[in-house]
Length: 368
Image (cartoon, rainbow, N blue to C red):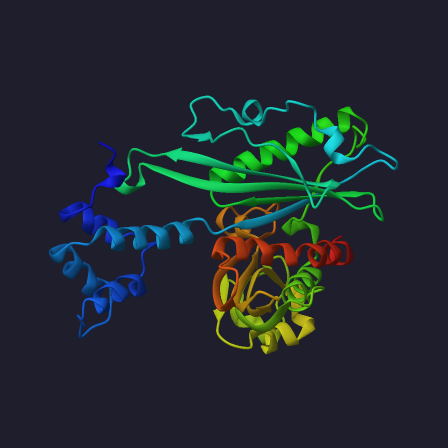
């Protein structure tokens, strides 16, 4: 019998409810619908009640849906490569019968590609193509509800007539989809080189931490988070800043207290773009900024609301790598109006697409 159709109870239910992806508000909503209120509104107060009373099939579906939304948060990376003038369109460069499964096949893998995804043109533009894919991951060391998980990803290639760049967008929701997206992008670039769209000597450019001076990295992240080229996304506030002092330099008096004491500093609050770390430009060459998170409002014809977007070089902190790539993710979406019933996941993809042009333009302006 398939476990996903069974209601968990006892220890299995307790383990499920304690999952970090299920938050206090999820459990509180269920409890309050039952007319139950607790004195201390903490997740630890709700879990024992639900373990004792059990959950209904509809409540399980609701919790699983919330958990999946949090797990499947799309993240966007961008690459670019120079193409030849008068080269064939991108769709023509993809050979007929191109088998993605052969490209991403990996021996002893814990995941598999679902179906037979293929490239399609976007709005009938043969120089703007994309491929959507899904993978199923197996992990039998996890609890009953996590033996298998599905994650989605997207690879998009776009060549504009006014430039000689092919822009490559990689969207992923897990490490597995990130690996698959990078494999597909690398293989397509090989195909483009083979048919003469791209010179064999050309290398893919990525937005890396090391591509900026300390000063220009602050400018890049600050302008990327605050100055948008599209009119549907509006900056509201800077809520999170992460940076490290540059230990290779002597510190000015204003931040001398950080010398040999602070390795990484994360500041959370309001109007952080007006703090002295940002306003005092003389300090910028002394700090290695790796993250800015800001809040926004968005206003399209059929949906509007608010969101939080993070711009960061995560591998700079976790792996101490100067090769860390820029990663952009939408951390939260709240709809004020949603006439078409668009999902949060799709809305996040639309918002990430809003940042593409400004990201590439600012990279060219501020990179070394």
